[in-house]
Image (cartoon, rainbow, N blue to C red; front, side):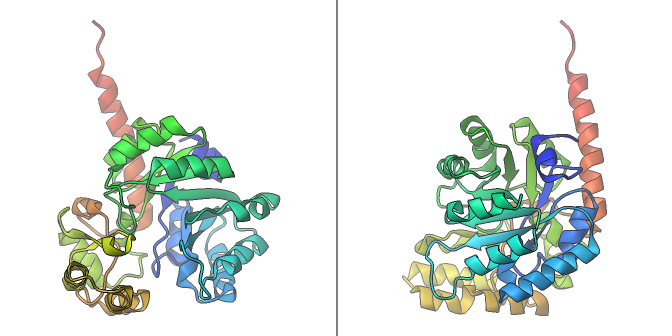
Length: 324
């Protein structure tokens, strides 16, 4: 396929793997890149610049294809913020692509452009997509209400956000949220997007580091098996429906503080549960498209199936048109 996204990123297929904390490591990212998409490793998984550099080099050892680094920038900068260190790592290592989210990446863009790094900025609303274009992002990722992780506070679906974003900016648009197979992929392209971001589907793969119990849960889950939490702290997150998520909702209903919520939603708690296989013990990002996942298979097969089935869909649609 050829779109502005494949040309911009130097990839075969316009499929970008979402940056998922703890899971988006070298093995997963390299598998996506080797299959023709763009793999992403997540900076926040690593406690220091040196650790991220090591992961970047490990990824390079596993693939000779382009890959990227996700840098999620929290709205409030605190003493623990490692954003600058992460940018230093990707610039020094000349990583081909950076995906940012959270606050504006504006002040880092000149340094990225100086060494030829492409920047994709992920947003949950059209107004933020417009700003991303103004500050110099090369592409924008728009994620809808269906997505796992943080879909913003507006509760608007990808079906609406993707075409409206396409109409509102001139840079390439990548659609995310609810996309797990060829039908979602083709739909995104039909709405004007020039690429898709897929997260949840890549968790249920053989290369994913998630505990087998999580993958088994996903195969058996329905589209109704996710919850929205953290609205009370204006950091809405879609996660798998489990005991931990239900507890967070109860805590928010009684006005729990951020400190209280962190005893359940903190990354450390989630990481332990994810790798130990305690599917009830922590909150874990999960998109509604989990209801479309029926089997665990290698990433190469996931991407191959999407592309071959997309071709079949386009052929079927073409046959629907008849001359009057």
